[in-house]
Image (cartoon, rainbow, N blue to C red; front, side, top):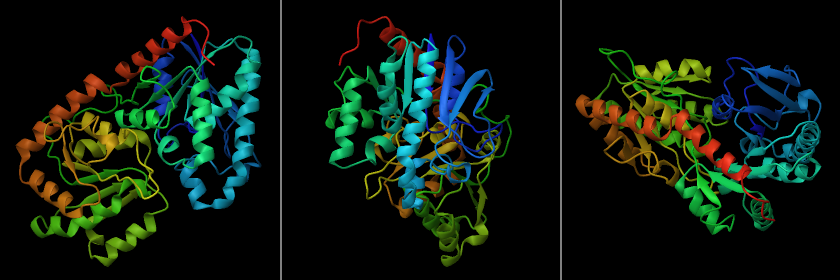
Length: 403
């Protein structure tokens, strides 16, 4: 098959710090299919190149210095950081639309895979009438587009897009429930397919005998990650384990506020902020840490994660993992089987679970092994990519799409 992937994030260069889940999915899909990617342009990169065997086309949507809508956290955090960037949204959609039309006129694609309902799903449907042949349109929602984009107009737009696409995939069971509540598809028109992890080549356990130490958080420093509740749990942890340290990998708009919080509660010497790291550097930290903690929350605006890839990566490295109990986590974490769940926004519970695991090495090891096994069975890229291939083939062999 020949597949055109529309996305708002993709690696800009080798060893980029951007999340690589779209890259990784494309890599696995490309083993037996031809993949073209349409992604936003940004300063200092070519508009067309081949990256790891995949042809990537990048659309311009403004002067280079003002192309600040995508990357470094994503479109929604970018808009929150600077409201004036809303003016870039129509230019962004137009730029991606024009490049997509150009490619559809030149190539015979079997499938357009649009990551995020808005704006990529909208672009796919507006561009499809210009195609040489009529490709199927598959939408994939990752969470923010489903939960955070609210209001009557945006909800109607999502419904319009979803009803004209050929299929909608979401990355968690909770998202499927929400999509059906919004009338974005029927029981059989929505499929749960999470993103995945390379649990054999990149994220794997440490060598036998490694003494794992320390606490670790990996993620963007934004509201829905709930990192402040982990920081607030540290005094209670340090009361029982005064030599313990917390390492935070990631960057974002909340960083200075979190640094100030550490200073205020007097734990700045026990918390290390490393900033954003190259993706290939992260497994070593997961393999060395005793416990990873992901205190994500559902924000007041309703924004929340779908199925967090960072949690899967920690589990794949056999790291004992504590995750807050929100809808997207429940597909991955089975409490006390492959990880521990805690209430959202609960520093006390986080501290209690951290102290429990620090004092019970055998339980940490058991949770780690069960966590890795669950990832290999359900979330390895080999499993995930086969689900997408099966869906694409089924749609391609089906009759005319519904309208």
